[in-house]
Amino acid sequence: EDKVVQSPLSLVVHEGDTVTLNCSYEVTNFRSLLWYKQEKKAPTFLFMLTSSGIEKKSGRLSSILDKKELSSILNITATQTGDSAIYLCAPRNTDKLIFGTGTRLQVFP
Amino acid sequence: KAGVTQTPRYLIKTRGQQVTLSCSPISGHRSVSWYQQTPGQGLQFLFEYFSETQRNKGNFPGRFSGRQFSNSRSEMNVSTLELGDSALYLCASSLVSLDSPLHFGNGTRLTVT
Image 1 (cartoon, rainbow over the protein chains, first blue to last red):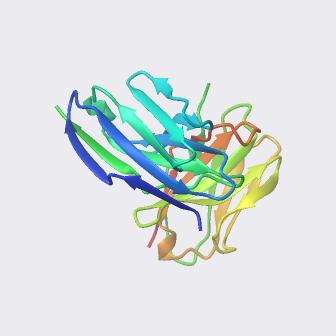
Image 2: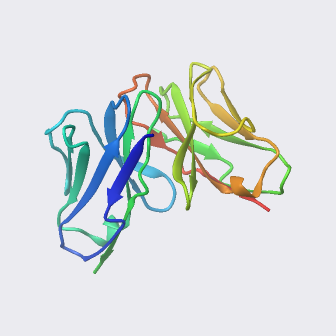
């Protein structure tokens, strides 16, 4: 059965801190891994990773995939209160996205 | 470019009724997927439509069905509603390729009483 585990489940930090969110997966017919940020309603697309070891960056956010270890990390540097959200990891196989339960990040001023 | 649009935003129904949710994808996107989000189960895949055909289906009972129209708009129907169907129903669209990211709408919050 396909499985996605995200850690930590919850994280509380102060503005300016750097955080690392982890995702490990066991997914048949793996094609790619996507990261989303969910605040109130719609998960917002952050990154799609298909190749191992190639870092993707967008501003203060970056992510990398390790296909050998079946894992991915999402880094956020110099966190801001606007980064407070649930971050969802979703490996994709030939059929669908399989979501983890998410990491809830709270950033306090 | 307009994002994925879902209507209605909120619905309250009673057990045994049926409901239809609507999704308009991003212009040019031909694949539409539906997901159910609950606090206990997280995001679960319902089905995916492409070119008016169901391409993939998740592990939900037959009470959950959908369709896609020639303009790529999609509807999802749930018949004989149960209390456990209360959830946020999210629609996502993507380009043709399986390697294109999915972009989600704001969802329809369904409450069954």
